Image 1 (cartoon, rainbow, N blue to C red):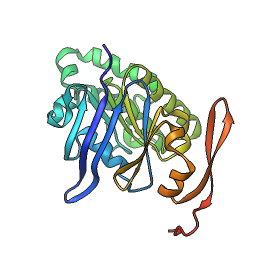
Image 2 (tube, helix red, strand yellow; image 1 turned 45 degrees about the vertical axis):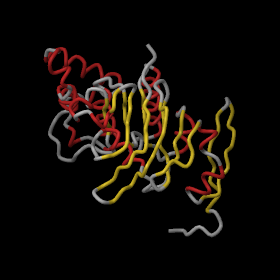
Image 3 (cartoon, helix red, strand yellow; image 1 turned 180 degrees about the horizontal axis):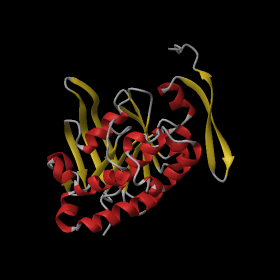
Image 4 (spheres, helix red, strand yellow; image 1 turned 30 degrees about the horizontal axis):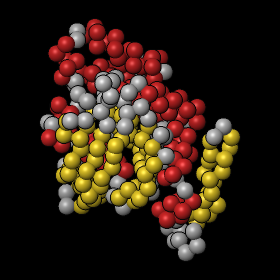
Length: 267
């Protein structure tokens, strides 16, 4: 059976009376590839991700195959959707292993069908996959920023969701761990999941994303492959920068920013 795609129709979401995403339609967002959400600060990237996760009230339609996600209770949605925030809460005394076990036990399906020992084995396997099993007994409040980010990623992927939502998963990581994490995220997508990732680093989006959505003021201004969506024209219009796309071999390219578009304010 072909894995289900995600369709976003006429979605509006925000914070109280302040609507950040307005009447947004996107799709299909398909499994098997990374979909990157990019755009300037305040464009609505994190708001869209939180609306997909059910953490913000939203109107419109979010259909995953034949399921309307907006109609599902949050408990039911959590069995098929997981969300990695930008940062974990501060002053959390759980160990890294306990954090992953807690994420697994929050899944109604796991809580009903798996023994405590089986859940612990799954948690350890997840830490091994992320490469932080050596941190298993470290408490979350004593980790560095990058280590906390990796622990948060482990919590997000442990339940093996159909829809994985990651909010800036590489922002606190050094270059090596950025490659490790994006490689793992790429593997997770290739296994048949829908993976939607907020990225600030456009070169990471160019390197890893099969689909790029450029957001500006809560609207999609460009959608397609990285080559189609991230162009000098789009970068000038959305970011206000003078940039060029340079080939670097092996069919890859990188973005080089020369400066601001003439007339763009510095602030």
